[in-house]
Image: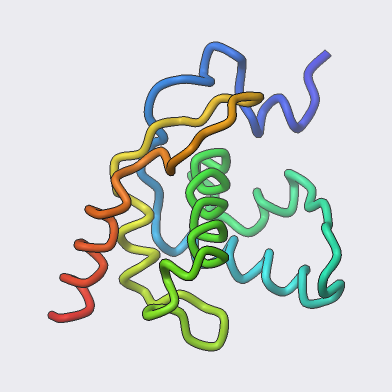
Length: 133
């Protein structure tokens, strides 16, 4: 029986390969939605429904890809890698622009990774280039 999460996460045969590029506006919208919800329960771990992610994205968005890309932005923010480009808790447009399109491998459920699924040095280089223009 299919659930809304099946549609959100896709089938197991879609668990490998690349994460498709997304629209930067969808990343920003999901970031804002997550931030707003987290502000209601500071310091708590919370669950957000797949429907909330769908509503935060445009109608043609690959919601799973948006989720995967924005989740990595949250991790980078926690590690202070983005500190230069985060103001009042929100990344600069350059961060969303690069995160939306940088080549990225899909992470598989249940696998522990020691590094991000994209070239972090290239990510930083591209963000720096966009902010210097």
